[in-house]
Every structure is written in structure tokens, then in C-alpha cells.
Image (tube, rainbow, N blue to C red; front, side, top):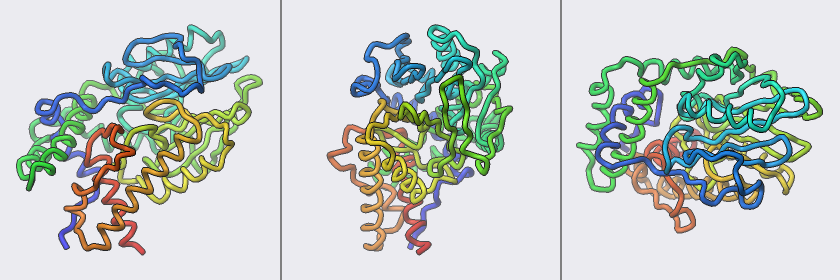
Length: 367
């Protein structure tokens, strides 16, 4: 059986070269629009709106920054901030320093208390390329203990690398595609990798100066009669941290939740089984919980169920193909998007669906 290499860091680096060509050939990457913001779970009028992102009040002292990439890649991901009587915490570094500056300005528009820290939910580029804002503003920067290492391994090596050489392997995959569908998927990956490469080369990397040991989490923090819980869950990146406000039943999930979009599964430490277990835990929380996802609109338990249904579909199709003896190299392209998920954006086929198939095949082979 012909094997298809799972998405490792090495493959990510080689695929990165392909991303520019994809952008040039195929236009912009899929947009994550916030046109159906919140479903009534927050104020529908933002306190500030820059187009590429808007900030909404979720509950007293809790605000969500929701990105709309159809209007630019300044922020890319969602974030937000929380504050009590004594201090506040801001979440995410976003895709650019301008994105994190936008959120800081929004914070100071509504909060009068100092910021005790800025927290990164994980190390991926769309959450971390704007990190320099925090050091420049003397804000302590929090993140999983492995964030600095993973950022250097993934993005530090891109900085100053030869762009053509870096993208060549991804471009070759486009050229060698065996049919139009495979070529379309290879182009989508090339576009994504190019975007990441170009962003990394425009960015000064900045790392947390308060690393959080996952073995010592959850960490209880009181912002002044406003207790929050900082917790680690496995699944998406190996560095995933959430912020939970138990009294108000609000959870900032980072990319452990993609709402109304296909999840990115490229990370070598992504585990489909662990991720599904994490989602099961989220589903066990209060039925009135509000989740601020890493991408997509704010949701309740219905958003968690939709994502679990999507994971079920990925798993069922992978198992069916595996049992039929279809090699991973073919399963990579043969996944069929169900009608229920036809409108869900896909950042890049290989980085989302292809790598989900690779990890599911690996997990089936392990049993």
C-alpha cells in the first residue's frame, strides 16, 4: 500500500513554499466571516469595528474579538479580553502587531484597570505573529511552556530562508498532481504555506515571558471579584490553553473549537482522538455555556455538537476508506464534504482534511 506522509513540521516547512504560488494562482484564502455573529449570545452592536475584526460585549467584563478574514488578515483568529475590579487579561497575539494593537485599544476603551497579562491560547502563526505588541507595552505575556520552542522550530527557520527554494516542494506537488481534484487541493495547500512563510518573514517573533507548565494547570486567577480558570486540554497543537469563567459560563477555547469551519489538523502534535475527547468534555459543561472559538462566531453547546458531528464524519469516512483498502495517498483527496458542511470554509485542504485523514489512518493502524 502506498503511504502518504503525515503533516510533520518538516513537511510543513517544505509545503510552505507552495503557499505563495497558491495565492498567486488561486486568489485569497477562504474567508471566515462574522456575518452571523454570536447567535444572540452577546451584544449585536460592537463597541468597535475595524472591518477585519470587531469587539463585542459577551457579558459584564467579558468581550470577544471576532475576526472577519474576508476583510483582511490583520487579526485572522478570534480573541478577547476579561477584566474585574482590579485587573484585566487580554487573549491572543493575532496575525499581526496591528491586530493586537487593535484589541488593546478596544480594551482601554471600556476598562479602567491595568492589564495583568496577555495570554496566547497556542503557538500557531494566526495567534502569535502580533506578539511584539505586549513587550512594547510592558505587558507580561503568558503561554504554554512549549510555545517558544514550537514557534522557533516552525517559524524561526522560515525567517531569512530563500522563498523560491522553500516553496519549491509544494509547487512540485501541484505540478505532479495526478488529476484536477488533487491539483486543486495541492494549490490550496500552496496558498496557505505561502501565506505563513510571508507572514513569518514580516514578523519579529516574540515569546511568552510567563511560561505556563501544563502539569500545574488549571491555574486560578482572580481579576478582582472576577475569578477565571486557565486550563490545558489536548487536541489541536499540543500547546492548547483555554480560559474559563465558571460563574458566567463563558469559555475562550482557542482553536480547540472551530465554529462553522473545518478545523486545522496539520500540527504534528494534533491528536484526533484526544481532540474528540476534549470536545466531549466541553459538551458535558453547562447547557447554557457560551464558547468563544478560535475561528467563527460565538456559540453555545450547539456549536460544540456541530464540531463533534464533523469529527464523526471525518472519522467515519476515514474508517470506511481504510477498511476498503484505499491507500492514504488516495484517501487524502477522496473525502466527500457532506451537504451539512458544504458552507464551511477550509483554510487549506491538506492542512485540514488531508491531515485529518492522515492522523485518523495512523490511529486506526495503531489498534
